[in-house]
Length: 149
Length: 149
DNA sequence: TGTAAATATATGTAATAACATTATATGTTG
DNA sequence: CAACATATAATGTTATTACATATATTTACA
Image (cartoon, rainbow over all chains, first blue to last red; front, top):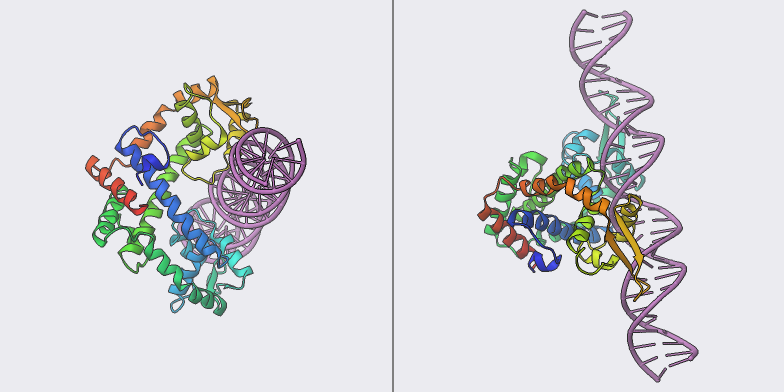
């Protein structure tokens, strides 16, 4: 549906409509995904961190700031998000012996098992934009990159 | 910058990249705007509600649920957002005599004065997508509408 | 070496969001 | 009209976020 009708708004111009449309669409997509993750007892940020940990588990153990760099929101309170995951037994947290300021964070077996059960989440993510053709998604990515350039 | 480099991520496919790119870009745009509004002591939601109230002030007074329908996030806790605006003297809140379940919310003179001082906010909004041409914004809007269709 | 600066993480706190529940009012239907 | 359903807003509660500050460690360098 056109954004004008969905939020019953009045727009000054195409740029104004664009920014509202972006926000509204992302809110809506995010809501779907949050509900999905909730079934597994995770927040979006917790899920993202688990995935990064799995992605790097064969390499060196990673620090809090390493995780932070990979978060969509650079202000994320990774320390406390990891805390939550630790409480659930999904990650291990040890002092880094070579730099005792840092912590080595690793995903546990329990964490890996949970992610495995959640593989449908990834499928879900890839279907959120299913109404677009590949070319359209490519064009969307180009436009988004340009917005931030 | 390309999204791959900004979040140091690895994407399964164009669709996956698209959803991450959307989220990341909106987060970034939103952050800019939040910092901007903060100077005036308002949150995004408070600002949006004030603008709707100004937009409709010549018509009938509006209810909490009317405001809710016009929020980008349909789950917004409008009751308490209006509370904050009321505490600041920016809105008036009266019982609706024809349906006492409802409240009539109106923007005050003080609220209007604040919005007038904030007109640069609207200019700011219209520049957030300045890197795109009008045609590109139009295409962006088309793609976003299609995502939600 | 001693001291200041920088780095990595954790904590405190107040504001906000998410979700369920409650309170009041109105609408509907037998 | 009584009983129940629905609508509207407010409240309670818990978790999360944002931002500032604290603590511990390492680095730089006079």
